[in-house]
Image (cartoon, rainbow, N blue to C red; front, top):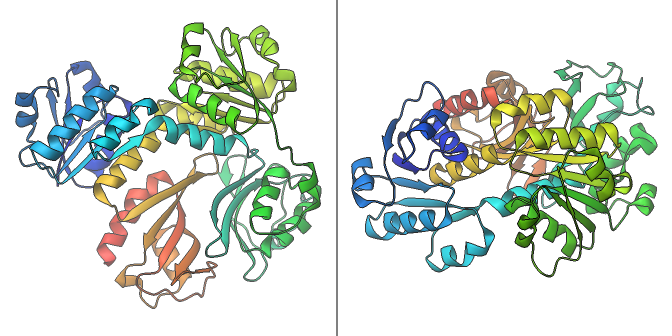
Amino acid sequence: MEIIVAGCGGVGSRLAGYLVDEGQKVVVVDRDPGSLANLPKPFRGTTLVGDVMKEAVLVKAGIKKAGGFAAVTQFDDTNLAISESAQFRYKVGKVVARLVNPEQETAFARKDIEYFDSTTMIASRIRSQLFQSPDSIVQQDRSEVGIQVIEFGIGEQAAGKPVGNLTYGISSRLLVLLRNGKVVPFVDETPLVKGDRALMTLRKEGWRVVKRCMGSDLDESACRGALAFGLASDALDEVATSWKVLVAGCSQVGAYLARLLDEEGHHVTLIDLDPALFERVSKDYKGDFVEGDIFAPEVLEKAGIREADAFAAVSKSDEANLKAVQAARGDFGVQHVVSRVFEPSEEPAYQALGMPYVCGTRMLALAIGESLLNPTVRSLSSCMFNQYDLVEFECPRGWEGKRVRVASNAAKVTFAYIVRRSTGYMPEENFVLREGDAISALVTPRRLRRLEKTLLRLR
C-alpha cells in the first residue's frame, strides 16, 4: 500500500519508519526541510518538502493513488482539513488523523474522521501507571478469559525462596526473571534475590500462590488486581481511596491529567513555570497551582511533595521531566512516579534507572500505524521497564499441531497465554496449538519485526 504521512515531527517520523519496516511505500511531507532529519536512517521511503494544505503538494505526493493517509502535524486545524480532503475528495481508502487538543474532538467526530486523541491517550496511560507502584504492575487484565499478566519486584520475604514457589500447575507461571536489568535463565530451584523483577501469568487461584511467596511485600497495587478477580486480601484494608498527587508541567497532557485526577477525588497540585498555562485547566478543577521549575527543590517543597503519594512529570522537556522524577523519588522518597518521554532515544536512560515512563511518541505512532495496516502482530503493553512488549497474534497454519515449546523456541519469544474460543490457557510447554489461536507473547522490541516475518512465512 502507498501511504502518505503528513507531518514529520516525532510522531510522523516514527510512524513513517514503522510503515517502511512493514514493507509499505511511504511518502513523508513536511514544509520544514529540517524536520525530515527526524526520519530513521537509512530511510527507504520518499520525502517531499511542501505545505500539506496546498492541493498541488498533496497531488505531487501521490494522493490520487494512495491507499492510506496519516495527518500527524501538531496542528488540529491542519490535520482535520487535510484528512477531510483525503477521505472525501480523493477517496483514500484509510485515513487517520492525530488530535492534539481534546476540546477539538467534536469537530473531528462531526466530520466522521478516524482520529487518535494523543492527549487523552497519553494522560490515561500515565494515570494507569501512576497508581501502580514499580513493585507491582498489572500489565494486562483479561478477566473475560480468567487471566492476568502481572509484573512485580521481589522483596525481603521472598528473597532466597526457590523460583518454583511462584509457579503452580495451571494457576500461575513465571515467564521472565530480571536481575540488575538482565534476563536470568531459571529452573525451579533458582533462588529469588531481593530486587529481582518477575513477570507472570496468573489465574484467580494464582494470586494465592504469589501471596504465599511474597507475604506482606505484595503491595496495594497488586491487591487491586487481586480484587478485580474477587480474591480477598488483608492488605486491601490499607488501600487509600484518595491520594495527594503532584502533576509537574501544564502541557495539554498535564492539564488533562490534573482534571482527570481531580474529578476522581484526588488532591491535585499542578506545577508549571508559566502561570498562563494554568488557563488550560477547566474551571471545575478544585486542586492547587504552584508556579516554578518542576524540578526545583523549593518549588516541590511548596507544592507539598513531602506529603505526596504520587508524582507525574509531563512537561514538554525530556530533560526537565527526568530531573523532576529523579528528585521526587531520589530526594523526597515518592515511590509512585511516572514521566512522559518525547524522544524515544531517551528511553534507555529511564530503563537504566528503573524509572517508570510513558513514551507518547512511540505509543501514538504505533497506534496509528496499526490502525492503517491491521498488522500481523498487535502491541498490548510494555513490560519490564519497556524492555519487553506484550503482543498478540494469530497462530499461523505452520504451527498447527505444534507444541508451545517448539513454536516459542523457533520464534525466540516467550508465550504468555493462549485464547481459544473465549477460553484462556496457560503457556504450558506441551500445550498443542491450533491455527487461529490468539497467542499473547513477550518479545523484545528488537525481535518484533523478526517475529512478524516468521509469522508471515508460516501463514
